[in-house]
Image (cartoon, rainbow, N blue to C red; front, side, top):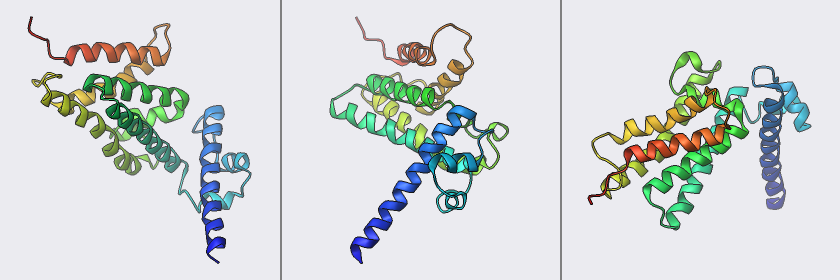
Length: 203
């Protein structure tokens, strides 16, 4: 009986992951608005009714993908801390992991950028975004505060404001008309911001 329950749980995990993977595939090829739940479940090779065993809506899938982003960033930061990265190196790492994820999953970008701006959220997304936003910016704020305490990052600007500036990089890059890639755009803007917040060493 215990083994049977174990198989059932594994099946649930596999089905949920199959739906997420299929959604990424369909959102990427069709666009978020044009993708139906039927499209997702056909790609996952599962019945449409199965979708509601795991998710309430397409918007909830976007939130799950944003949670995946937060997890990826957190994991990269943990690895950087293990390698004794400076605060500036951690910030650059977090920014580039985020840029890579958003570049590969462009359909998540509008929800990521919208923050709490109600008009920019997809239908049903406002409640969901409130759940995910608190998990993202504090990752950067904690690094910024640590850098300020270490004398590496200037203290005359609140960490919360600087974190907002890092978040705004992705919006600026997404609307850029320059003939460079989204990731390169983010990288260069990140370097400029990092130079602006560092503490100048006395000579």
